[in-house]
Length: 240
Image (cartoon, rainbow, N blue to C red; front, side, top):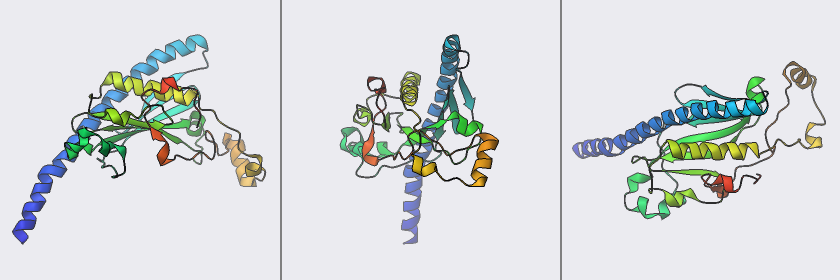
């Protein structure tokens, strides 16, 4: 019995553990490419933006191995890579395609998430401010990829396995995220939610302009509202 369990453990190390390591390596390489894309885009867009108005700046910041930021005027996109590999829930549409059903280990993916914050939330250290997940990029052992995002027109998971991710695809994802962000406005919080304030809160606000803010307060990310961000430019005016 002990020898059988040892054999099973070694077999899992050979298959599952090696698979997850390969997925991590691919995702890490893609994230490094993404950083290059972000830096190139920041330089390109900043030159054009400052020509329009010198107050508008586009800035790239490398925040370490697993995080990068892109400041777009008053907004901030945060790109965060998870160091783990993920499997999908059986109800996820990734299981419906032949690409995964033909080889189940293709469903194991690394993940890069894209969040939208107000730049002032970081600038003034308003730790209670809200940020929103606007996209997730999934990469598997074969560098096949798909993107999930908010209220987009097409479901890119249907194309999972057709192409490998590259810098051109990453540029398209970032452009779509920027378009969505710029069309996503900050709303005034309901009067009844802010009509009472403590002395501590007003003192904090005076010190650093603090009020809990976030785009579209009360917004909830619904699991049934997930679709591809790839063709966002066809729906840039959509709101959450």
